[in-house]
Image (cartoon, rainbow, N blue to C red):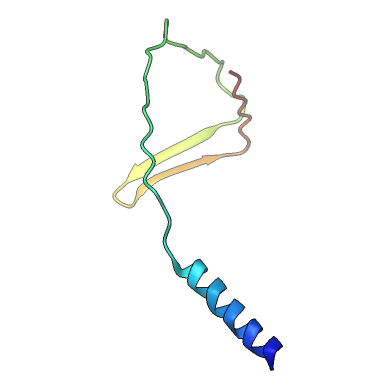
Length: 72
Protein backbone atom coordinates (compact mmCIF):
# COMPACT_ATOMS: atom_id res chain seq x y z
CA UNK A 1 0.00 0.00 0.00
CA UNK A 2 2.87 2.36 0.80
CA UNK A 3 4.39 1.71 -2.63
CA UNK A 4 1.10 2.57 -4.33
CA UNK A 5 0.74 5.83 -2.39
CA UNK A 6 4.38 6.70 -3.14
CA UNK A 7 3.92 5.97 -6.85
CA UNK A 8 0.72 8.03 -7.08
CA UNK A 9 2.28 10.96 -5.21
CA UNK A 10 5.35 10.83 -7.48
CA UNK A 11 3.11 10.80 -10.56
CA UNK A 12 1.18 13.82 -9.24
CA UNK A 13 4.39 15.75 -8.52
CA UNK A 14 5.87 14.98 -11.95
CA UNK A 15 2.61 15.97 -13.66
CA UNK A 16 2.52 19.26 -11.76
CA UNK A 17 6.14 20.01 -12.66
CA UNK A 18 5.58 19.25 -16.35
CA UNK A 19 2.48 21.48 -16.53
CA UNK A 20 4.17 24.62 -15.20
CA UNK A 21 5.30 27.19 -17.76
CA UNK A 22 8.84 28.35 -17.10
CA UNK A 23 9.62 29.98 -20.44
CA UNK A 24 11.44 33.29 -20.23
CA UNK A 25 11.70 35.86 -22.97
CA UNK A 26 15.21 36.22 -24.33
CA UNK A 27 16.14 39.48 -26.02
CA UNK A 28 19.11 39.44 -28.38
CA UNK A 29 20.90 42.35 -29.95
CA UNK A 30 21.61 42.13 -33.66
CA UNK A 31 24.25 44.30 -35.32
CA UNK A 32 24.07 44.61 -39.11
CA UNK A 33 27.34 45.58 -40.78
CA UNK A 34 27.33 46.50 -44.48
CA UNK A 35 29.67 44.55 -46.72
CA UNK A 36 32.87 46.23 -47.93
CA UNK A 37 32.02 45.61 -51.57
CA UNK A 38 29.00 43.96 -53.19
CA UNK A 39 29.62 40.42 -54.36
CA UNK A 40 28.76 39.96 -58.02
CA UNK A 41 28.68 36.43 -59.39
CA UNK A 42 29.13 36.16 -63.14
CA UNK A 43 28.42 32.84 -64.79
CA UNK A 44 27.98 31.91 -68.38
CA UNK A 45 24.55 30.77 -69.49
CA UNK A 46 23.81 27.07 -69.05
CA UNK A 47 23.85 24.85 -72.09
CA UNK A 48 20.42 23.42 -71.26
CA UNK A 49 17.44 25.61 -72.16
CA UNK A 50 15.36 27.16 -69.42
CA UNK A 51 11.79 28.30 -69.98
CA UNK A 52 10.09 30.86 -67.76
CA UNK A 53 6.43 31.67 -68.38
CA UNK A 54 4.34 34.23 -66.48
CA UNK A 55 0.55 34.32 -66.69
CA UNK A 56 -2.46 34.99 -64.49
CA UNK A 57 -1.93 31.68 -62.65
CA UNK A 58 1.62 32.51 -61.58
CA UNK A 59 5.17 31.80 -62.66
CA UNK A 60 6.25 28.51 -64.19
CA UNK A 61 9.94 27.61 -64.60
CA UNK A 62 11.03 24.57 -66.59
CA UNK A 63 14.60 23.38 -66.92
CA UNK A 64 16.39 20.09 -67.33
CA UNK A 65 19.25 20.40 -64.81
CA UNK A 66 20.63 23.17 -62.61
CA UNK A 67 23.93 22.96 -60.73
CA UNK A 68 24.11 25.37 -57.80
CA UNK A 69 27.14 25.80 -55.57
CA UNK A 70 27.42 28.42 -52.82
CA UNK A 71 30.79 29.27 -51.27
CA UNK A 72 31.49 31.66 -48.42
